[in-house]
Image (tube, rainbow, N blue to C red):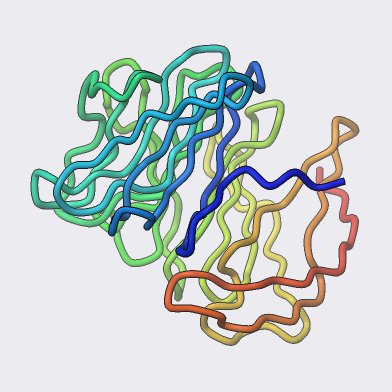
Length: 231
């Protein structure tokens, strides 16, 4: 049965589990926000990270008690590396555009994120240790609302606002797949979605969607799953 984790009268979203499954990081508007909440579920204790501006889109470093998040206390929305206890370790990106929705490669060495600094609807890839950008992925017609690596780290995906999924080879940035929902195209139909990858080299992608906008920030999504191979 589902277990309720948060209890407030506002919006909690973008949950991210640590590798050991003991910690949950998420964005919450419970204190006016958006703030980052980092919760140890077994001990029921929470660290709240709150700076001026936005504190959103947490992503844990694989195998470590660290996470990346988008913060804007210095003006622009940039990606920072934080400790699990809520201390800033360093700033990772430095662009004039918005950098949001970071995701780590399985080995924790690279970060992919939606980056307005490299064009409308573009993705950037950075070295986690240095913040050096080592590649960008083509511009989409719509902003990217989710992105990440496949479990083997060899491919990168991006989901645009209109619900289109694109998959690239990370080594040479070759576009492998473009998958658009049959009834998509509506702005906002990609919000809240991520493909789930299998170990056998297939990925699950929603092929039909019904969405109802229940607030300014949150969409309720009903998804029918399709299995697609890639090479």
